[in-house]
Length: 215
Image (cartoon, rainbow, N blue to C red; front, side, top):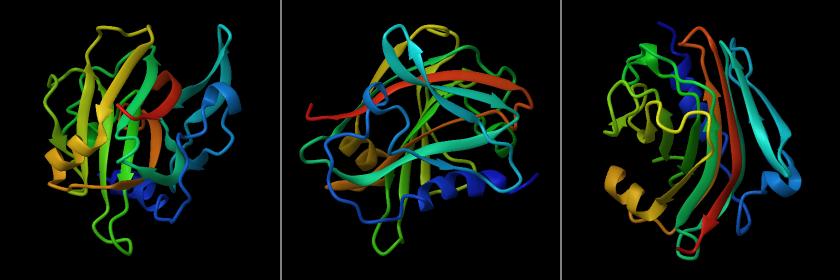
């Protein structure tokens, strides 16, 4: 099996190794479309197509996946003292049945949202990856099969809610402490990705605004 997903997770993370000024939120899709969000692609992989589209009167991001893997990154310093809560909306059209998501061969999800901490001088980078799981192993979290620097957290699992908008909230300080033993004051970016290259099929998802909240 290829080593592409090690580069897939680490590539998204390394793309966020920067020093940024503090903003209250990632640029909201509802106001700016994809402005301020950067594409992250992977060598020898087809690209998932991301586009700003209208959902009723609200602009959201549509992800169309066809045996592909690529993501979008918003890079900036996140003040966890002021805004420790990550909140977002997402919707998926369908799941990928039959995958062992905890293995390298099955590491595909119709929707993911990443929170990224870059560590010191680029070392000790850690990422919490919130996923819409295909439901094969329930709601237990697990270490990413390619790198110990990332942890997978299925905030939704299985078919309940497929085809409908779902809202998620996570306490970033609590999650980085729980999964990595880190008591952090800042993070360095967020990202999203829909991938289906292991699935060898297609995927379709939508993302609403990704927000940082006080509580």
